[in-house]
Image (tube, rainbow, N blue to C red; front, side):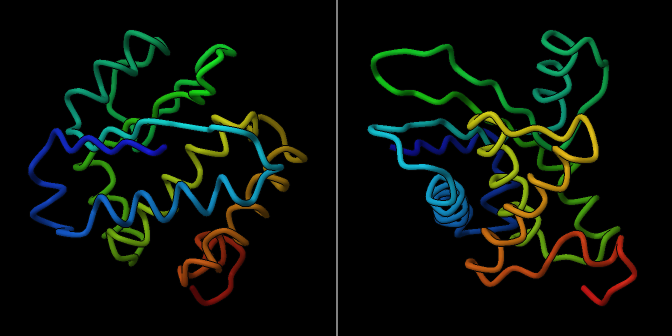
Length: 155
C-alpha cells in the first residue's frame, strides 16, 4: 500500500495529478526489486520548511533538500518507511535542470523508494547500481534519463 499525503497545496496547484504520479513511480520502483510481500510506504509532499526541519533533526543538516527517505525497522506489517519531498526545492531543481516538475517528482520518488529498499549511492559502485535502476524505472514511466545531461547526452 502506498499512502500519499499532500501537506503543501503548492504540489496540487502545480501538479493536479501529483498523487497518481507518486503512486506510479513508487509502484514502478517496488516492481524493479525482488518481490516482497505486503510492502507499504508513505510519501509526504510538503514544503521546504518541513523538509528542512526533518533534515536538521535526523541528518544534522540545517537546510531543506529535495527528498528524504526514512526506512522503517523490520516489522510484521512490512512497512518499508516514509519519504518526504520539498515542493520549493523540487520545483527550483526541475526548472534549473530543464525538466518538468512531474518528471522530477517521479525520479525523486523512485530514488526515495530505492533507498527504502536498501540501495545507496555512497560510492561509485553503489551510485552506478542505483542510477541504473532509476533509469530503467523511469524509462518504464516514459521519463527521460535524468543523468543523461551529466554525461554530455541530450536529456
